[in-house]
Image 1 (cartoon, one colour):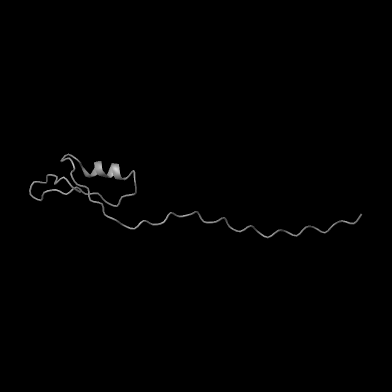
Image 2: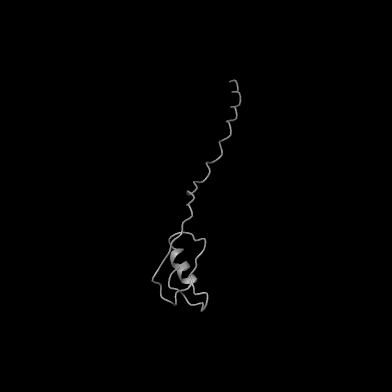
Length: 72
């Protein structure tokens, strides 16, 4: 019986697809009012970071006393 010729090497597989990237969210500002005077930037950041990534958080304060103006 005659030997068969070797099978040709198959072409290489294409690279795997790139992972799907989430769409970039446009920047937006959110103002929150009627805050308790004891609320801090950290408090707000902890709560809102559960919803979406944050760039910055700021509680507005009096330039004279440094006390919260109860919004941010």
